[in-house]
Length: 137
Image 1 (cartoon, rainbow, N blue to C red):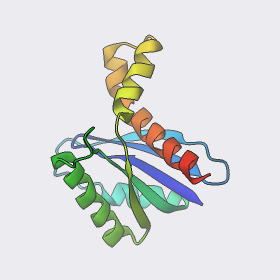
Image 2 (image 1 turned 45 degrees about the horizontal axis):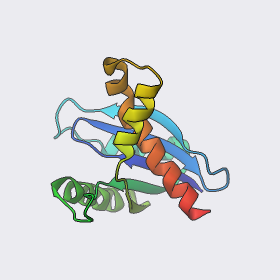
Image 3 (image 1 turned 90 degrees about the horizontal axis):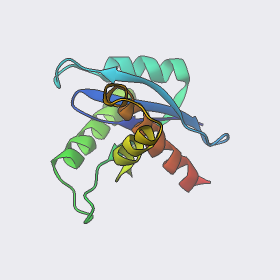
Image 4 (image 1 turned 60 degrees about the horizontal axis):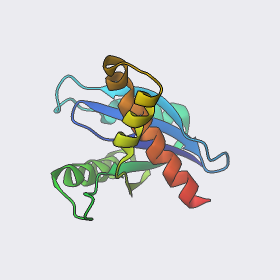
């Protein structure tokens, strides 16, 4: 089963693709938005069709104390919209610290701030999806 991992943000949406059989998440190009109001459903619909996606995992940014803030609520609303408009099974997954892990890994790799900014969302989506795949094994 092909699975799409999404790190949802106002300006950038990190994407990764994986498969339960292979259990390896691969980053995809980040979906950029000029404004938070830019619609992303159609590009995601195309991507799901092209990649044969049967399941979507949206990162849920839960606070360290386990509470859900404004970002988590926005992610839940986005997941619900995907469910309604794409007709694909969608679930949320705890993404605590994935962006921080991605940033730290790129720092250790010696990437400049500019390069990190361009890649952090893709890597965060990849880490989120890899965590999901590992938990499903």
